[in-house]
Image (cartoon, rainbow, N blue to C red):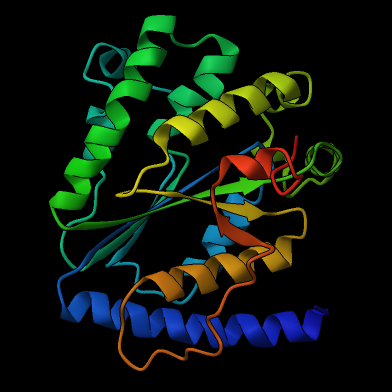
Length: 252
C-alpha cells in the first residue's frame, strides 16, 4: 500500500485498539503479547504503532536488558514473571523468555542443559499463565537475509537509530544459519494449543505492522468490532506450520 493508504488504515486500526483497551479495562482482562524475531525484524516499530494512542497507565512495554548476577542465579522465568499483566493491563514484551531459545543458544550465553530445560518447561509455564486468566499472543517477525543486512547497515549510518546497534547485531548476519536452526527448533517445540506461534512476514514494515494489529484485534474480544477492517492478510500473518519452512513462507 502507498503511504497515504497506510496512514489512513493505521489510524482506523488505532481507533479499534482504543476500543479494545476500553473492553480490557471494563472486563478486567489481562493481555500479554510477545514479540520475537531476528535483529532488525521490526519489533520496535510495530510495538510503537500499537501503543501510540493507548493509555500508558494500562499499557506497558517490557524490554529487559542483560540479566544481572542475581537474575542468573534465580529461576529463569522469575525476572519475566515480575512484569506479567495484572487486571486491566496490556503488556507487550519486546523479546521475552524466548531469548534462551534464540540469542542465548546461538551466542553460547546458556549451557546445553539450560537450553533443553527451557524447551521442556516453557509450554507448562505458558499453560499456567493462560489458566490464570492471561490472554497470551506470540508473534515471530520473520525477515529475509538481504532485508536484515540492509536494515542493520541503515542503523549504523542513521544517527537517530545508532542506539539500536549492539555487538549482537554485528553477529546476526554472521550467524544467520545458526539463528535459522534455533528459530526452527523454537517454533516446533513451543508451538502449542494454549499459546500458538503466529508468524509475520516482515520484509515490508508497513504491511507487517498493519497485519499484526489486524491479527491482534481479530483474536481478542471487544465491543463494536469492525469485522471488515480487521481481517488480516493470510499471506503476511499466519499460524506456524512446519510445512512453511519448506515452501518459503518462512525465510530459510
